[in-house]
Figure (cartoon, rainbow, N blue to C red):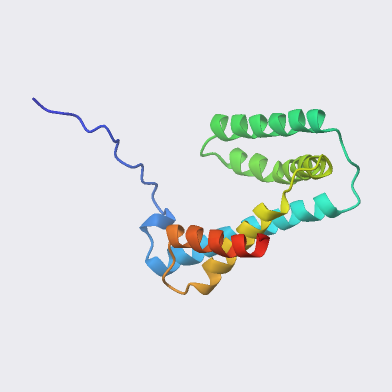
Length: 151
């Protein structure tokens, strides 16, 4: 009797960064983390900037609608040039709606800045770890450092 494997084989895309040497993979991880931190910086600017405050329920529905639309674009146009163009063009509206959502959360009394500290600490780890990058190590060290900063 042949017992099938419960875990499917990974899908490998030609030219994927996971097949590149370690130095290139590490550079890719650092670029992605830095770009993510840049987008979080845009959110911080929107939250603490002079944009109008929108009630929490309507902006929550708007954010949910943006995320669902982005999912449909990503699933419906998977692998095509149109997916890249539409996904990229949806980034700025998504950031604006997410910024309005976070501003509404902040206005309602939710504390959002500790999460931002944690993201910044993980990014710092990625730049100062040298070639010894580890997602687990980054998580643990950023939790410890951000806990000290928040406390």
